Image (cartoon, rainbow, N blue to C red; front, side, top):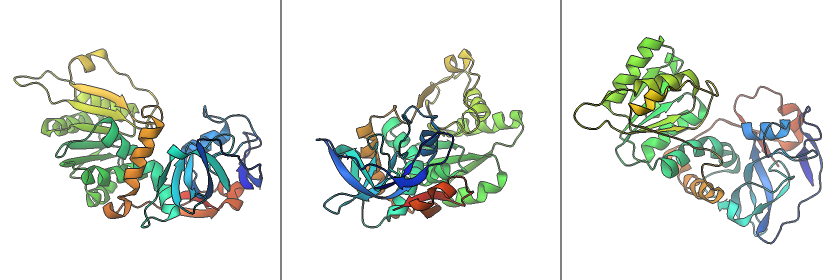
Length: 317
């Protein structure tokens, strides 16, 4: 079969022949039709992820394809060394979910990862209740914009979006944001703005940034409640686009009502993640979720790997 093969970690994958996998007793063989070039896939191909393995290997954490009976499925966690960027993959049957007819292969492959970041965080990790307020820290990216729509669909009463560029406010409000916090403010002004939003009510924080914006937000939650108990905030980290670490004084946790957690591979079981993806795929069209996807034939993987694409690259087979 043909695949995008990593022969050395210092060179982009090459399109060449690779041995087809043989499915084990609990696996199915999927004929791949689309697989997105995600950050995880790039990390695998560069040897920077724990799942990279030893070359030669085929990268790719998930994709879309067809089973032997013709059923279209989304799949994840294919068995190494054959990842999703191959004509065929062997994957546990439990790690596949049927796709509805109203979502095409390229869209399903492109939207699964960015949309799942908020879907799993809100349904599995924080268990959003109807009417609660959600603050999306870092809403201007693909995942953040989808998170606004998903939070509203799942019943959020109020959505607060943050972004560095004030010019993004209009678009984020069009997607459903009820309030906007520009991160480009001075540290003092940003802290005051966050405190004002928290005073109005924030139940859940979806944090895609970490770094200084997360520090400012957590510091703003620091305070001493008078009278009734402070309103709890479920703070869930999803990404670290603004920095991998923060300074977190112990007093912030002692004097605030913040429950901190994370959402990502390892925070949910693979089965729980697949269950969430299955429910997400059923509503992509109904909610109007979209992603700027750029389909590229897998045969062009070597040149596409380093090109500046305008959207999320999805390799097609």
